[in-house]
Image 1 (cartoon, rainbow, N blue to C red):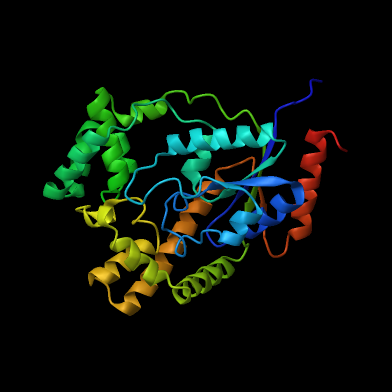
Image 2 (cartoon, rainbow, N blue to C red):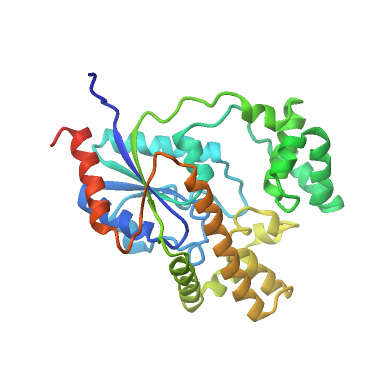
Length: 322
């Protein structure tokens, strides 16, 4: 039987507020690893408190990758993430460091671990044109346009999801081919690493909901609203006609805070809606994770010994230290 000589990596996956960051730090320090963030909010500079970005002391203690790589007004695609994360992991392996992928953004994990179907690259000029059309006609009208040219894509994309509507129209206008046809094409080469997929998720959903509420209140106490006010004061963001269409500002918590500061939400509504949106995010993340059939699930509070056992079984076998 041939020996699998691929370099190894660990993927700590799970819904928001499930304890991934703390465990990734613990294992990175113990195993000589480096953390590759798989989080679509942490890529943006200035999204710190509300995105639960690791503190400066944590970033200094363990090398982190894919944090603060874009300004909040700049786009960042899953394909870009996959390319940059692959470079980080290759660098880890070359230095004899264990890559620990930690996060909950399913599309990023999919792009990195499984590859994406090839399709046209982003075109900033065309994106600006589509955004201008949306400002005049509204995103529901552009969603109706998408439904006429690509019913399959429109059925999967909500009329309130400007990022995906924009991308689908962009791909069609660039190539003349619906995005659903591109997505049906074979994916590119998969990641040449052997990856242990571990899902951290409390078995009791009420526990996760309580953690989400407690963490959001802690963010408010830590100055989250001041952080959002500083973002709003940035000239490049003030120049954006519809900032709530930006992926960074649409991140849970930030969108609701922005709407509150715009005066469209009352103070009590802001907190309730932010917590509800975070719970809905966790629900979507759990739904996606259930489709990862090769992932093993653990309750971060009660399964610590089982987690250690899973790690011990994986690393000695592939590193030849058993």
